Image (tube, rainbow, N blue to C red; front, side, top):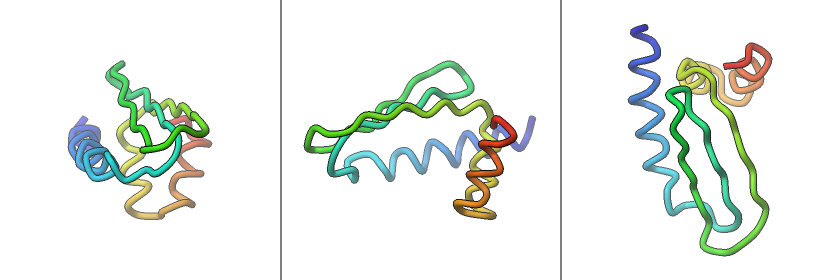
Length: 77
C-alpha cells in the first residue's frame, strides 16, 4: 500500500530524530514489519512498549497530533 510506504519512510525519519533526545527511560517500538526499535534515555527510568500495527499511524499523527494518535489507537493502527 502506498500510504504504508510513505508512512514507513516518515516513521523512520521520526525515529532517527528521537534517537538520543530522550532524557530518562526506555521506549520499545514493535513495528508492523515485525522489527523492534528501542530508544533509550541517558538515565534509567520508566520503560514502555508500543505496538504499531500500521505505518498509517504517521499520517494520523502529522494531520491531527495527539487526537490522531488516539484515533489510531482506537483503530488498532
